[in-house]
Length: 401
Image 1 (cartoon, rainbow, N blue to C red):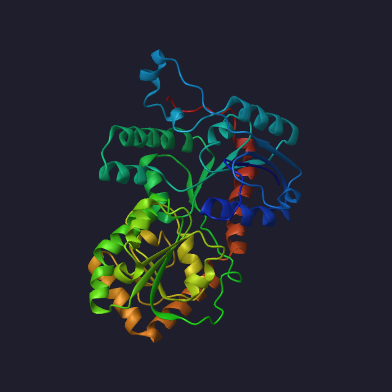
Image 2: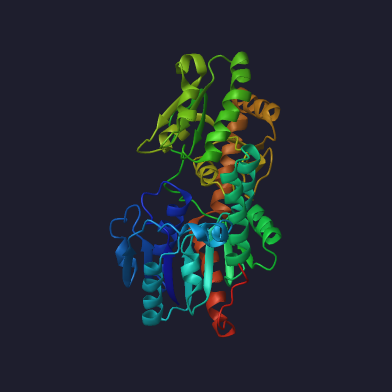
């Protein structure tokens, strides 16, 4: 197949699920298909990554121009206002489509989807995460006009542009179900992420028996709120029973709301915030268990897959598990509220043999279901099916704004 790859940023470093997805899929697709790349020149370009593409075009991201005042009331709730659609980007994409004649456009993320849909080629919209639910939860938690505006624009964006794509890919079953309700008629399919089971593998490092760990980007609001919930509602009760228990929060860009959890000191709070680390693996491997107490967010949590691959016992809320192959009590302990989180943490800390069994079962789950080779095969099937039905796609007519 000839695949035109569109991305809203450059896929390096591999510090989030978006970048990881592109970095893992592209080399595998390039072994069997012809690829060209168009992306916004934001972030970094991975060393040697160009060799996977016949041609690469990196387009500077512009500062969106301000609309005339008289237009503002008419554009306030427009889904087109959610993400900037730079005509210069559209020109580059159009030139590549005319020269390359791709069998399919693989558009990763939301930002360039409008540019993709303007072309005479079928579009596989790899939107990854559904946004309306998270926008609703944000508005519910803090009902400001700005958040209301974001919610309305997100809902209308999904209804207008998701439905115009030939297919939309998501990484969790929950996001598929929500999108089908939010945007009836959308062709939503599930392609879950993978994990590098060799890179994230157990290595026999000694375990700190009283340490719990969480790892993630700590400027990401669902991670922030999950940690604040755990540190306010669960950890003090656990430390009242076991004063030596410590929570290690590992991840880049911690917001002040995160760093304040470790004040005045780890000894008093039981919380250590590391900030950015070169390698998260020693921190996760050295803990007694991985806790993922998220109370909001969308998508599939790569952090859980990585913990499983490292053979760690995982204690998680249902929303943290995002459609993974979960067997409560076998490869994970599922906890629905603060009381259940407390009980689950108590179990894994009291019973190292249970923690070891959970970790071994989690790694086995990864090896059976969540390798990147398997995920790439699923993505290829979706690309091929969209490309194979190209003759069915005529001029694209977007529903009214």
